[in-house]
Image (cartoon, rainbow, N blue to C red; front, top):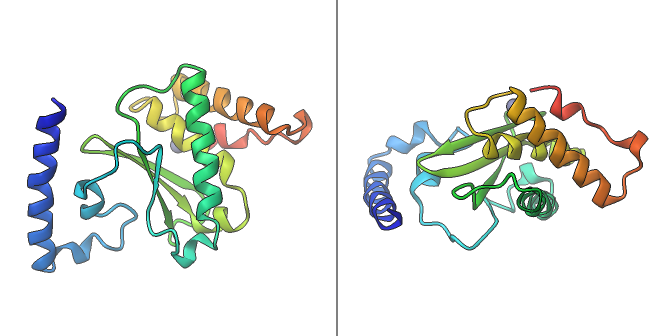
Length: 176
Ligand SMILES: [Zn+2]
């Protein structure tokens, strides 16, 4: 199965390279997840793969965002909500969505896109918990399975980070 998936990715990679050579990828390049992101070979032992860590939209904080996401992933494994196929998570930033995040599952790969303003303002933990909850409950949208995962993750994160109860902002689990 894994080998078949790899073969499909190799074929798609060649196809994408051909399409890029023809200039077809231009229409994807403005999107937070492009054609090449889906088919480019990936390191399967990583928890998080950051795209363009030096992109100015990261405001120099790509390392911080990746570290928070890694902590959340480890936690999701420990509380038993992580399952095979979610990892690695590709972490992207977008200057066009600014103030929220997005999660995608494309051809078996996981993507989280965070808005540049969230990153700049250091408000990335709630957004990452919200989006990781989508990846581990894919298809549940904002229904109870997702809500349970989001609140469990964020609760545990705050507890481990030593954030006092009255400072724990759970709003990301009650909004899109
Ligand atoms: Zn959502």
